[in-house]
Image 1 (cartoon, rainbow, N blue to C red):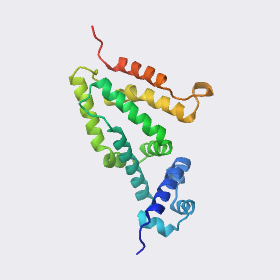
Image 2: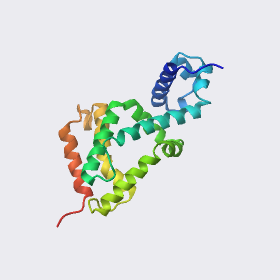
Image 3: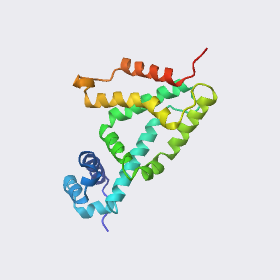
Image 4: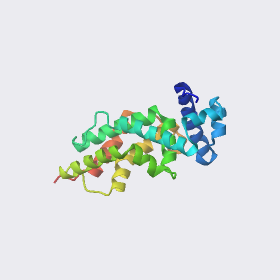
Length: 199
């Protein structure tokens, strides 16, 4: 039986991510991946049982990397504003550092693999974030909202800015680079929208 070569395996994973982003799931195939990676098709089957197994494993790995980045210096016990700021910092750092992995993750999260990958890689993170939201509501630092509305308001502005940053273009094609000032301006508006009004 042939043994695993970790260097080759990393090359295969990187090429697979590039191809998934460029070609989509339907255009992605094992034969082409082998050719692009400079390995035989037989070598791929040392690492993965089939295309589906490869896609799932890559999705789970990206999800786990994302989770590890999101929980850095974060606790669900944090005050809401402090905790959300840390989430913005962690998410922005991940997206800017790993644009290709982020694009692959988004692609997989809009596919039939979504539920499996999220359940396998982000179940602990979902629990942590649920606790953070519940604690913030209990402390009256956050207005009660549905999960979907909360996510849209809490993170939608950040991801829009990050998309402009990665494309290096703003509205109308003008050059754009995400600055600390723009991030802070958007963050303060989000906090204003999400926190109870003080009388």
